[in-house]
Image 1 (tube, chains in turn red, orange):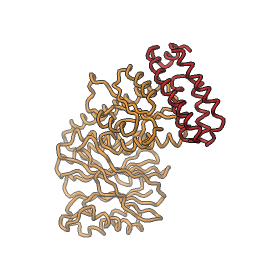
Image 2: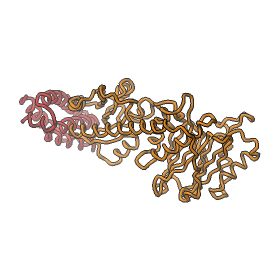
Image 3: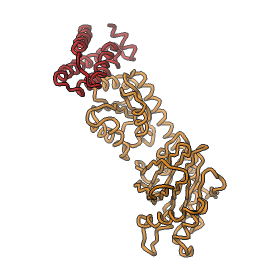
Length: 103
Length: 379
């Protein structure tokens, strides 16, 4: 993951981009926790909101795989169907960890 | 438009960024601060509104989907307050449905950026809309400067129904003094769109006459397809605040009728209410509150939009016909009498309706206490 290039594409210096990625990782971890808590209680709205937030943040920074996965979760939650989402959440966690490890 | 009356090149332009996601706020703050803007931040609706009032930003970037008060709620409240109504708002949102976009524009947003947004795109649009605000502000200042130079009373030709037959209107105009304070204007905005304006200057003196010509000039310049009726009247207010002598003001009513879309939009600035007599359905007074024009920079005008049908009629007028110091009637009471008179004019052609109404309400014109203007419009 080339932070310098990603940053440049957004018009940001590398250090500015890294600072923002740090905030992203924090909010992403918080959003994933919200997803994990909302699933067992079938709280569709909470799942949808958390996924929406993650989709937006990831998309804005160019992390399109995270954004697309979050969009899928959000779509399902809006249709009141949150079965089978556990693997997606595991994958999201792995992707965020991947970004953390790069920093 | 910019919430400042003079452009001070040394004070930076400021932007209020509103989003419940701190990442989005930080991203926009980083990008825009590098461009030289002063950035204010808010993470929810109530804080956004407080910041808008306190800090007077030149532009607001506003997320729509926020818990509690969403972006639509926020913009409605901002537009309902004189201090913040003129600040341009750009929506940022992940919702891409056309209905949501249209609602945003209808509520007064100047632009709409869908998420995920590219920070440089946001930066470019911010620049564009600030340029537009600055240009509009310059236009107002230059209009005001030109009008300040007019010193002679100018004769103004009255617009007759024959001049614009497609505007389908009738008018009764009687001036108590040579330099009357009441006046009206009918404006062709496009083939199917006409503007109708009735106004009353406080005071009857020679300076009112030149001001009437000035306002007619401002109407021609500022009532165009690119401005919504509310924007047009606000711009006229901004010019008049600069040029009217202290204590002088205008009450006015401005209606814009689009005969193609069958939409009628009425703006009220402290003026007697319009009487609406539809072909089918109940006739009614369009009750609206609004500030007068020409005293305050931050103003709120009343607005109502109606879908209309061919044959529907609207009556705009000044208070001379229904107010009477002699009989101790003020226009708020007289409006009901006006509505009744308008209804009874349904059987005459629109061009004759104002005359009939005048006869009903003031049979003895020698007892006239004030100017009379009645402008009758038929869809």
